[in-house]
Length: 495
Ligand SMILES: Nc1ncnc2c1ncn2[C@@H]1O[C@H](COP(=O)(O)OP(=O)(O)O)[C@@H](O)[C@H]1O
Ligand SMILES: O=P(O)(O)OC[C@H](O)CO
Picture 1 (cartoon, rainbow, N blue to C red):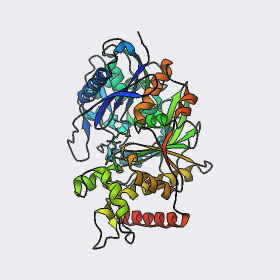
Picture 2: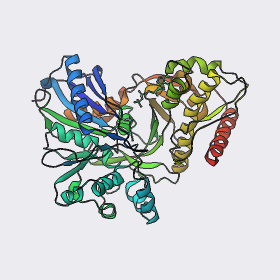
Picture 3: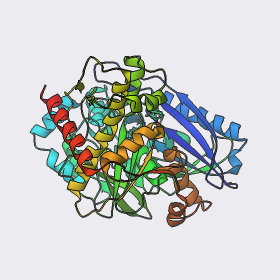
Picture 4: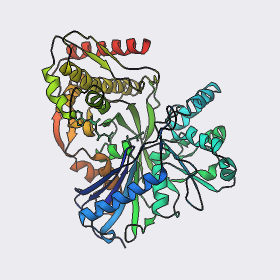
């Protein structure tokens, strides 16, 4: 029986799983986190052991509850948020996965994607799913599993297997095989889901040879996803959203024109476009922002692969700093006469360039270039890449007079970077209290569904900026700086 006013958010990410307990006032009161191994069985391949995803999630849920002193009976519900696109395939009777989870970063289907593009499949995919034909998404990963795991295709055709993204797998495990469901935001990342009709695409499934019996039921982000009895009592799962969408929800980006940008290892920006699914002409993704009461809201999404990771590189690769936050002292001390430009294309460039083979570069080096200049260029590269995304978003949706950018993620703690971001965008940047917006988004979905948290308007009204960074530089500075960046990117891509 659901009890009083606590919500458990489960945040299953690429490198760790977290459980966070929120109280009735939506304050996080306890958190537990567990990392798990990454598997790289071949060049460009990235896998997770399904049992690691499940056990670290379960253990961090139990540990967070223990720490909070909250029992299952006191939980009003569970909200799940997750690394998106990562693909699992399991036996419908035993729940045993046929293979490791193929992670969103995995590039093993690059050649398959090229072949499908040559066969002319991309326009259909773009039209129906809002995505690009890229190994990033689940569709070709699932096809790979069916084509490469011995016996998989026969068992799939006999209706004996189930596919899911991580949310779906966790729901299956938590409900002990009673519920095979996902939410619209996760479905939207599979490359198999028609985001306009709100249903799996028979055309794409046919093109990829994917039996429909594998696919989960797609539900609203707030709704019933079954109950779990594995935490010491029966608790309903009431909220589900992919992690980037959950961050947009946690940031209360509920009206068209509102945008959030999450600065973790990489950066993911989502711009709410309301009930209009804006088709990008600039290689951004169109995706479901959230679905509530059967109503879909859409977003334009831009993904940058390297944001906080460039700071990690200064620390671990170059040894220029010991801690990430030292960049905040170094950057302002950089020689103003030197203007280093760093293009951190360590793993290629994401949106809007989508250039997987480009590698990084630094321009403008002198004999005096040192840690401070490198730190400044590294932090600036994050703001400059964000401007690339905003330029693409504005070109895709010119009628949007975009005014609000809300930031979160670990790197949003860097005041220097956030000020530079405001300056290079020529627009204010708002940073909320607490940068854990992803878990908050999942918790709010569940708590709102349970009736203990405010509705959308009430939740949005509670959002408060801890700090607003207002631009202090003029347009001439901004344009010159950005023009230099564009030249540096073009040069890097040409090498
Ligand atoms: N004060 C800071 N200045 C610059 N970068 C920072 C700062 N604090 C954290 N970071 C960067 O932010 C990233 C961590 O953010 P986090 O949201 O925890 O990432 P993820 O969830 O992707 O692991 C790291 O890459 C780190 O280098
Ligand atoms: O687990 P994260 O925070 O790196 O997020 C991964 C994204 O959902 C991938 O699309």
